[in-house]
Length: 377
Image 1: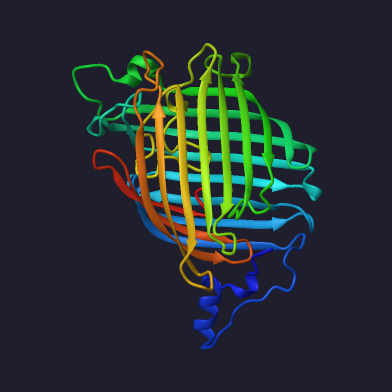
Image 2 (image 1 turned 180 degrees about the vertical axis):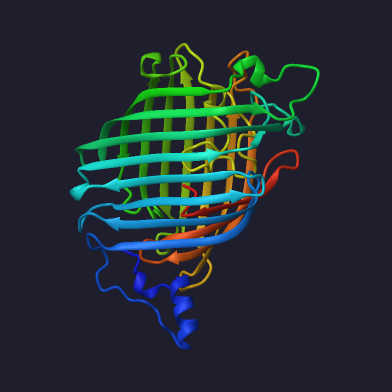
């Protein structure tokens, strides 16, 4: 079987060590998988993306195994201060206990977030955007238990609190979609989440093959503190196929369907929206929040390929399509495609963490850079 050997690869740490020492200084690890060994990737960078403008970012990824035969666990965190006075501070973790018996999933975020909103539905025009401002605290925590090999079920608690919500420069003369939907100074959602998950990827940071499928049902209740009762259903499915199978090149496919079910209305800023998945990656080619509604359908495919034989530099090409339900009829009448390509630079060859820099295009002149520490999906 064609396998990945980090000792035959080069990353940015090797490049830096070789430059400082004046000769080749490639790191070698004689133990491919060892419990407790920590692989750290840290990236201080100044960059530009559609949603932040120019920004200073300090991002870090901590990867480790809790057992010699288990899945790779990782913790991702960063601190961003942007041109638009945004503060973004997430802590996101996917931790596997010994023998993959439990999977602990964490998504905590603090945001001070001046940003744009464009109204509801999938046919809003690009020049309809205007500025809003708010603070946001997100505390999502779940624990899943193995019921058979690679299949897990579990429960979580999800809490979202949005405060000091303000429309800065809404278009004059008519109420905005935000106002018609229900504009208030705060939004609170609090609910229990139920999870079913299949995951046979051994390295979720950068899979070469395998399948991930997760279904999350989240009912929110006023007795838990929510502004109102509402329910959401999320389907997140990913497939990874090595192609050709004698290389490390991968065809990756992602379906992300985010639905509001039953009666009740989610708060406006917690509605399904472009770029508001767990890692803010849906809809490359469009600014975050470009489309928003009660229901979202999304599909993306990406081809990942090596450029240099030592694994230092790779590339991707991708295409995606998103559709949002009409706020009146509930029908999916519009599809918004996106496409683009990017570069991958190896930051840590042992955890296979890459710096990902992409440029994506959408419709009506939309386009921009998208940066990640670790693969987009």
